[in-house]
Image 1 (tube, rainbow, N blue to C red):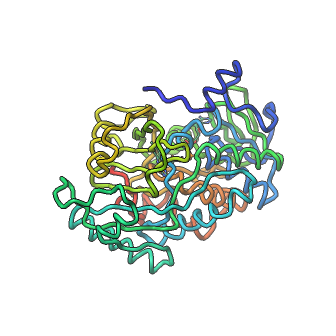
Image 2: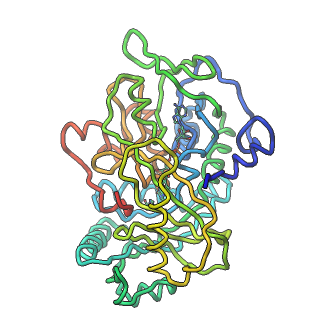
Image 3: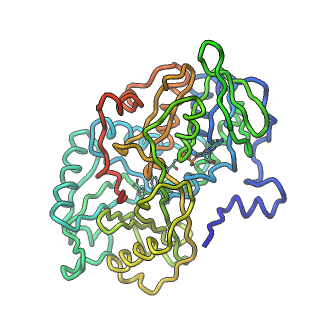
Amino acid sequence: MVHFSLPTLVGKAFGKNKGWPQQWSKPEPKKNYDAIIIGGGGHGLSAAYYLAKEHGVSNVAVLEKGWLGGGNTGRNTTIIRSNYLCDESARLYDHALGLWEGLSQEINYNLMFSQRGVLMLAHTVHDVQVLKRHVHANRLNGVDNEWLSPDQAKAFCPPLNISPKARYPVLGAALQKRGGVARHDAVAWGYARAAAALGVDIIEQCEVTGIRRGADGRVAGVETTRGSIGAKKIAISAAAHSSILLAMAGIRAPIETFPLQALVSEPIEPAFPCVVLSNTVHAYISQSDKGELVIGSGTEQYLSYSQGGPLHSVEHTVAAICEMFPIFTRLRMLRNWGGAVDMTPDRSPIIAKTPVPGLYLNGGWGSGGFKATPGAGHLLAWTVAKDEPHAINAPFTLERFRSGRLIDEAAAAAVAH
Ligand code: FAD
Ligand code: PYC
């Protein structure tokens, strides 16, 4: 089934201008900006907000080729946690989680942020060892995470099947109680409204098709489907399309793009109290406040920019969910969709300057960037404003793929890759 997000449906109902009915004006692009951000997802919009709010840079445009939040921001399963393995990642994701905790109040927009706890299941001895290693590493970094026996996991999540006869029995679980979910598209709209109120121009239906450079090599502006726009600085925050945009500036990036699918069930009474992830059986699940079970798959094993994927992957995921939670066996699935996620070799992101003066990159978040939205934007804004990274994003460079100083988070990604 094709997934139409709410903004699309409303956009169709409201006529030819796709997108959410505007809570901000619809500016025409100016001739010149101090900074342009390419990509109107949560990351780009939050970067614009923090540029204006914390650095006083408000002569900024966010250029979005479609509609706000129509990329991965509006397509993900909204899981938020900070239980990553490496010290660098713990700092990065916990910085974001800290910002989530006050965000609805700060931008005066109900993001439905709900810290209901994230449970990561172990089904094999290898899983037990890996997840316990994460628990210990997290605690050393001041990030909450605890190990639960199968009985304790069931007490936390009563629908969980802990029968030893299951094909992949639950041998234990890691629990991050501060983890949870939020309403994904509200994050884009909330940041957009807050940034616009500070003077940022948010321009939809404006695809960047080229990056211009001056004789000195610095960025000078962009070519778009709405004409040329000048800019002193340009930040790429375009998720799946990072490598395409970098190529416009002559940079070859170590990023590949894969499809990742998700689906929702028909809505039911509240039945599922937390978030559960199982890397081994390629499935994760939570229940939205509307009542739908929100379920996701592992990444497809082929490169593609398609925002969809084969049905058999989704069937495999649903089979795994039914085995872990037999009470859902008779539920109907309502709709499925996909996104295209940008993966780096070490499954960690890049928030950094690029070799082109004035050009910055926030990308490579793969299957895990929603949780990072406030942190990614905050750190990207810092990097653009000061032309140097914040201490938290300093390790997340493009250069690490040359030097070998990788930040390996394949296991913490929690989604089979
Ligand atoms: P996007 O929201 O994709 O925004 C980038 C924007 O750039 C898009 O709107 C796009 O249209 C625009 N763009 C691209 N090219 C151009 C151009 N040339 N000109 C102008 N605009 C352009 N992460 C989690 O943390 N937890 C999860 O549970 C989770 N589940 C996921 C489930 C699925 C099915 C998918 C697909 C992803 C999931 N993710 C999850 C990952 C997460 O969605 C992303 O990492 C995150 O949303 C990236 O945000 P963004 O703002 O960088 O990207
Ligand atoms: O990053 O936690 C995550 C995640 C879960 C599902 C997709 N991504």
